[in-house]
Image (cartoon, rainbow, N blue to C red; front, side, top):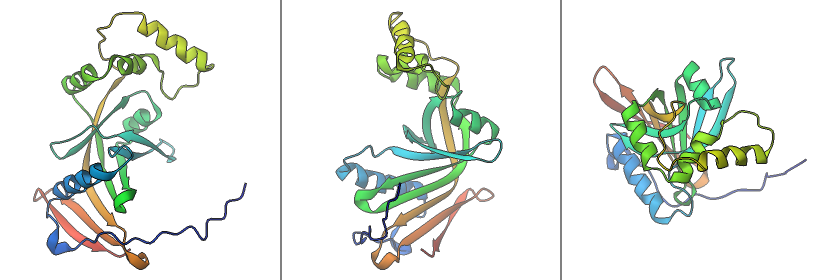
Length: 213
């Protein structure tokens, strides 16, 4: 296979980031950008890349859905026995990435993923559509299975039972507590804007700096 993408280029001209016009709190800027993306995006605005690292140092990356920004934490839910769950158990340091192409923007986040308490995970699981609850119980996420029929049979078995399901212990939420949040805005001539916020735990505040593109 060969793909030559040397001439695949796009010019970025929509917005700019100036230190004197943006909030000192990165969560305020994130909320503003998220609302902008929601207005015109044709894709899931809350889709985010989640990067984890295995015990032997191998990275893995996948898309998950942000379900809440709560108490200055980014919340998502998953199977704790999945590859990402196992890797977070070994090394809770993770990275997130939001890419909002229509606005020519990215937000990159570094932090630590902590398990949510059972109450919050129970509440979210109960709010999900029944079919999503059934799928979470039926699917042995990240395990090798025989074929599609095997998966369908697992789902059918769960679906034939009670309509009042309890969240399984192997499924629940994580809160990513960020220590770095970087905002990237595309600009002409590849002279992009990059503003990085770093958490200062001793002062419970954020420092803000511009990075070269």
